[in-house]
Image (tube, rainbow, N blue to C red; front, side, top):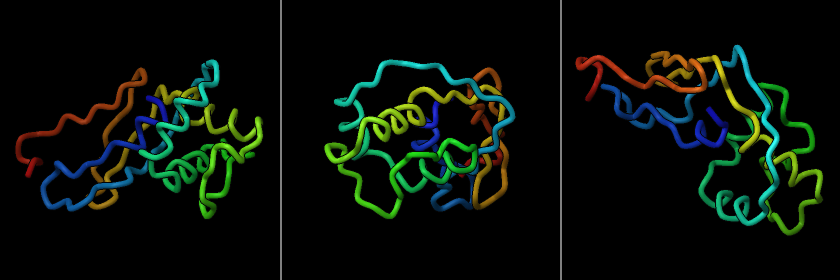
Length: 127
């Protein structure tokens, strides 16, 4: 599961959950699969993600070096090549192979195996 995917997931489908975002990410195993940097993709996706959440997750796994501060407004045109590469790396290249996602409101844990988050729940858990 890419960190980009994590940024869009929530557990608001659970009973008694209002937002269910952001899910707490615990990583047991990760891979980094390098890919070519696409600045147009970064420009388009940055307006859709919650950068503060991405930064916090990157920091929790030691991938925050050279990332722009979450307090600053991100202007991709003003970022240097190293910052663009790092932003691309955390969004696209870091792949969670084994881990878990945890609902911030209920504590319900969703396992990640082989890079696939299992968000299936029992019928009595759905609102």
